[in-house]
Image 1 (spheres, rainbow, N blue to C red):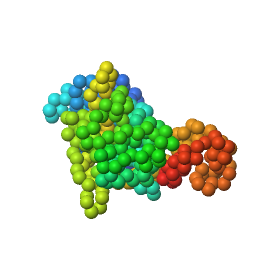
Image 2: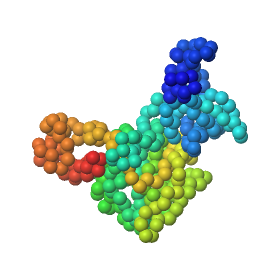
Image 3: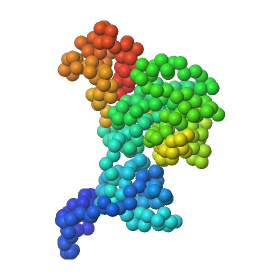
Image 4: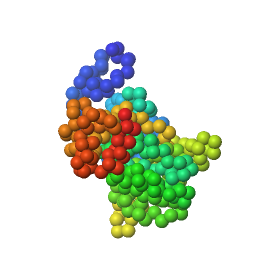
Length: 331
């Protein structure tokens, strides 16, 4: 490597000084006193970071190399953190993440795409009609959520157009909580389950996700759009993820956070293993201990412990059916 070539590992520069330069210290910079903030949105290499009482714009320091910075990240920032117009801070460290929701472009894509960091609840938003529910998409988002360690919540919109009975029957046996809303409805119950949590909203285009966010946070001003009458699909109205603070709920000052994400039309799961899905259900995981080595736990798997549990009466058939439908979607 010549002195003019770009270093992909900037941290290496702290140990190996370039030629004809002053020797650098072997001690890496100490950023423990740097200002800590939360990344609330990302736009073309610029990061909006929320500090205690203000938002600032920041770039990513070269020393982070290929380390990605995504919405929800807790980061350390140096430089001008005043937040005044025209100022620019610099993200120098990303704190350890508690959770990361990921997806891939498709099931053959080996590259994971982190979507959101440090969320603890996954809200899958789907319309009951216009467009109709896509259970395959719901299943795949559920799989990604369980793999990330997020608590799922199914939010059914446009309840004025169709009833929720079919989806309640499909996801009730999995223990997935459900909230049903319609235009102009009282959102008190939904606000209660969002309070104090960091919830990432995910759903395919046109399901009313941004409309719901605007109802929860009136000054959010998220773009909304109609469904294409020919294809039955919605068009993308949100181009980037954004974290928004929810207003207080009753005596709870922390109304929580909502991270609104762009509508998706596919959700690749090449990064997910069958074992991680099973492990998300402790009761089912325990029942698979007697499965033969290499058991897939799918329908028809020989001598699967889940089938044996149903035969003994230890597992409800509807729960196994719902679980297998979901696990099949993830493979």
